[in-house]
Image 1 (cartoon, rainbow, N blue to C red):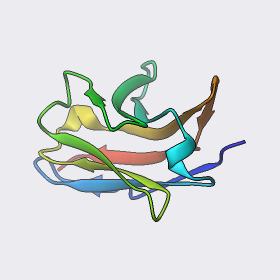
Image 2: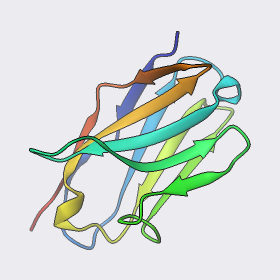
Image 3: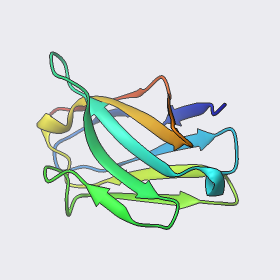
Length: 115
């Protein structure tokens, strides 16, 4: 089983930056894919970014060039650096781990982009 705890959300002005963290309860080197998803009010959950065990990254078109997913193996933590934030980035951001064939989710952290 994998437990995920997100942190780092909050209120930020348009154009600002935030870094989200996801602490993982087991070695992230054993996890096939780690990712960040987001769910805006009234919308379905969508992919923001993923990183494979081999280090291959994938981004939604809406965040390319602004968001960066990374990881720290020593801390078993995955990060999402978010720059040039826009109001449409407002959402609950969820950490995801694909461990073997099972998807695990954190409880989410709220990001609000507003002036």
